[in-house]
Length: 264
Image (tube, rainbow, N blue to C red; front, side, top):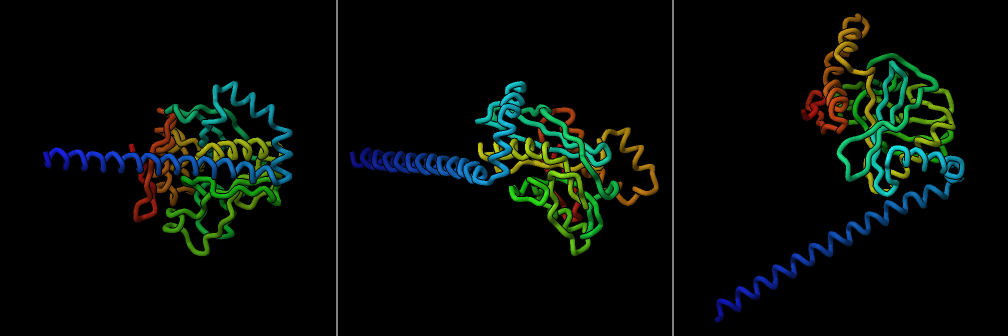
């Protein structure tokens, strides 16, 4: 009898612990959503963001509806191609596995050459795998989205000072950033605000030197000017190729030498 009572007591304690874990997780999730929604509310206090929503509300609604995307579960992936001078925007609902391309924006201007950014003042647009780190509603270039350059790869392979402040922004001038005009940055900025306010903590931004097909790799790596970039570019190529094939984002790491290891 005492043994049965002991078992019941332990079972009761386990149930209480389980309920406590559920409550903590629920409260954490609730708090996370509150914080995410507060982000959009804060953004709307800025004059340029508010005005952009007023101008682009119908555009955003139609863009998402045409692609069967729900604002409540929006996730973004952004990739840039320096040679083609294009910014691609991909999106999916959280419940879906694969992304679909919903928009392409041309660069308005471009500085530097193919190859990664390796030091401050080299005018280069970085190359590698990043995410949006900064939403700047009072940018000199209307609105801007900052990427987390320099990342760990840049730290290992670059020469200090590395510089920083790499943005996708409005206007049509650049010294290492990517301008897409004031009108188009409104659209991209608002899409990013929506994704973040719906819970996407990190919006990936992949920056490639060019579309990294085998044919392009063979063509560019044969050129004498780009010989020093070959090993680095080969570490970027698998993520491009896998995404092209599956439309899902493979994970990656950065090894001790600073090159990318993409999970195949």
